Amino acid sequence: MTWNTPDDRKYAETDEWIILTGDSATLGLTDYAQDQLSDIVYVELPVSGETFEQGDIVATVESVKAAADVHMPMSGAVTEANSAIEDEPEKVNADPYGEAWFIKLTPADPAEIDSLMDADAYARHCAARDD
Amino acid sequence: MSALGSRLEPLVYDLSRPGRSGAPLPEPDVPHAELPSDLLREELGLPEITQLDAVRHFQRLSQLNHSIDTGFYPLGSCTMKYNPRINEDAARLPGFLHAHPLQEANTVQGSLALMYELQEWLKEIGGFAGVSLQPAAGAHGELTGILMMRAYHLARGDMARHKILIPDSAHGTNPASTTMSGLEVIELPSDGRGNVDVKALRAECGEDVVGLMITNPNTLGLFEEHIEEVVQLTRDCGGLIYGDGANMNALTGVIRPGDFGFDVMHYNLHKTFSTPHGGGGPGSGPVGVSERMADYLPSPIVAIIEEGDEKEPPLYGFAAPPKTIGRMKAFNGQFGVLVRAYAYIRIHGAAGLRANAEHAVLNANYLLSKVRAEYHLPFERACLHEFVVEGRWRGAPDVHALDVSKRLMDFGFHPPTNYFPLIVHEALMIEPTETESRETLDAFADALLQIAATARDNPEELRGAPHTTPVARMDEVRAARQLVLCCRPKFLSEPAQAPYT
Image (cartoon, rainbow over all chains, first blue to last red; front, side, top):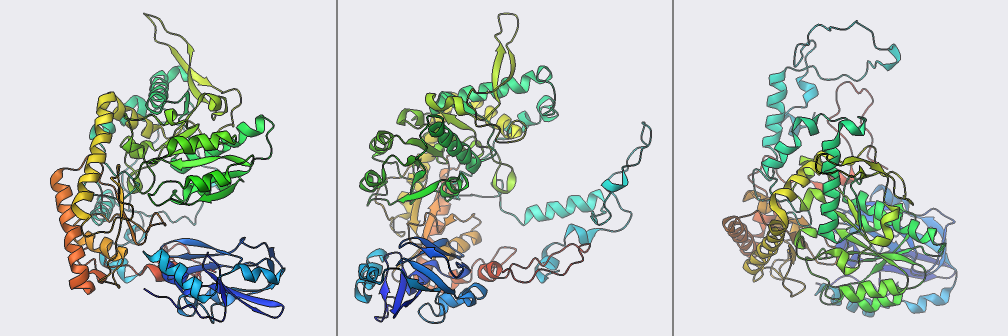
């Protein structure tokens, strides 16, 4: 089994992706995560202005199989939450790397991005867990 | 009303006709008095229905259901064993059945004697110094235990502890109880054999640890191979040990959790000691505690107030442990469940309880040995009372554990627990219990093997299952995304809720 891992972004061990553009970053859940969870039925997002440390739980998703936490790959302040996925959680299954982004944030320490995996390393991380 | 409801069985409200009643009431033989008008509610719209219509309604509903009395129920982690009818006879003895929780203690000495003896037996079975019968079910026992552990540290002036360590294979109730107690959950990974990862535990042990919650055997049905080391590491940093007794059916009469060094453990009387649960009845989650925790037990516990002698039985009453965390439940626990568990323990005795645990383990291993050629076992070990296999095959990418479970219903079996524990892909968690015959286990194994073959040859048959049940496969995704209650009684006039936000 293989999962989509676009190489324009970085990945956390806990199955979040993040794209850094200037002072802002966008965070979402990976294809592997949505596939493992199966049909997602509920998403809970933070509100703008909340700040989190790297590794903190920033959102929660619930599928017909399980509930899972979404962690902050980098420390920072939330600037926008994608309420569209709260209304239509199925978007996380349909388009995890596009329309179904979770939050935008202002990273507190952009250098933290170096602690994350690139697409190849993350693809191997997924494959290793499938056995 | 939905199409489903009209086809199978209407709501009791739809059977209601004005003026009908279930039984004629005699004229009162006391002076007539009106209820205060502010206590009367017009809008309740209770159904008006004859006794016969009521009997048929509920009988038909019961026939749409699956129960222990109708078929095998291998729902992992739930210990769906047979509930002997003599337990029911005991619980219906008039002295127990009609006792009122507000009666004076001297008028319910029999009930208190039963509770006292049950406390003593649970102490002996678990190797504990004290027991409270109050908690209403397993998770309530967990909450009780965590609050006691917190109180223990606070009473010693140790204010810095706020973390509870919990393996990633734990029941979801463990982190929930911890969070409800205001403490922080630290998840511990499992090692390659399904045990707690001792290295990870060592790294988390410190002076901020309240304690560890551990289930043994764990939810994979595996005995913790390093239990002594796990307990010692936690104790060395000043932490307490909470045992989740959900899987006690594997150990009863064989090993005493108190001897591992557990400080608190809840029993699930409704699982281990055979009382109807799930859709059939309430739980009961007494906690047993070590010597150092006994003073913190919920209040009250049943105690001997005056010792008896050759002529007189002892006088039973209630007592408050000196540093009690207070009351955890109104009145005295789930008393009817306590009576059933008492009857079960008394009938089996020490040797019988041990034999039951051994048979539970034997049945699980027998079943595992019959199906493991076709179902991947993630941790290659003998199991205890239950086992977890994967419901997926390389040659059948579109078949999932859920499809296996749904197809099992066509064979007349209740599905196993699905998708738990979370650390196993497509988990099927199977607990046969000791009360099933070899013939039943063989039939279930045959069904599982047949389903594995169908997964490769005809996956569509599985994906469309069940085919023979009163209700076909539910659209679980839609049901979870659009929480609209369609079967609203007619008297509720507000419109149905919009999909939940």
